[in-house]
Amino acid sequence: MALRGRPKVELKTPEQISIMRRSGALLARVHDMLAAELRPGMTTADLDRLAETMIRDEGATPNFLGYQGFPATLCISVNEEVVHGIPGSRVIEEGDVVSIDGGCIVEGWHSDAARTHIVGAPRSEADVRLVEVTRGALWAGIAALAGARRVGEIGAAIEDHVEAAAGEELSHLEDFGGHGIGTAMHQPPDVMNYRTRDRGPALRAGMCLAIEPMLIQGPGDWRMLEDDWTVVATGGGRAAHWEHSVAVTEQGILVLTAADAGAAQLAELGVRIAPDPLQE
View 1: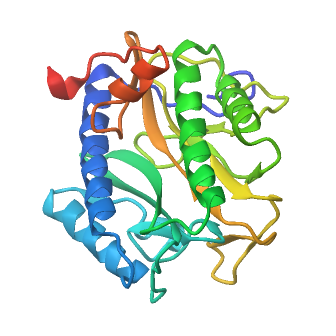
View 2: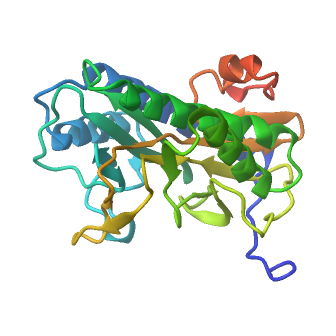
């Protein structure tokens, strides 16, 4: 049954959120491993194999692999590629901006997170700002969630952060955004990265959301490649993508895909996280 014309949002019990936290903590370790391994001369397929091996060795399942026909464990997007890049023979070079997006399933519950890296020495200060502003926008959105009443307030906070930090230097990838997550990787509600007329559904304990700003240097024009997955910026700029899965609980929010559940980063923003099930 849909309420007030909106798709039904799946609410999780504390026990289910605990399982999602385990899935997210594993994904955080996978991202840490990939960050340590990432270097010039690797192919994007090399990174994908590393991720799949670690996820399966931990008894989990990659959730991107086979999703609507997607052929890999990770989405790896390099430089002008914004999101959904398919790993393959592309060789990573010094100074590349590489976004790695992945997820896994533990006992039927999904996690989803993305990080953007500059490989070796940056090619420009603009690339450094791109990555840092996008990361900051993610945490601004997560911090806003802690006190928000509706989902749309997350996108408003992300937009405000980007405008204050970068002005017109960076553009949002429009038509793409975050989503609910739980027994499926993509669920209602949509979590956009900018203000919309629709303020979205009311936030409730048990909601789990994937928040994921995607920014492009210069204009935000884009096109889809012939593989029907890879989104490429067409204005000559590079792109960055940061994402975390976050749970709303009766005690506050919990960043499921951060190693420390978001405690350190959110403390800097004046937000205290809910108790972490992995520490109990």
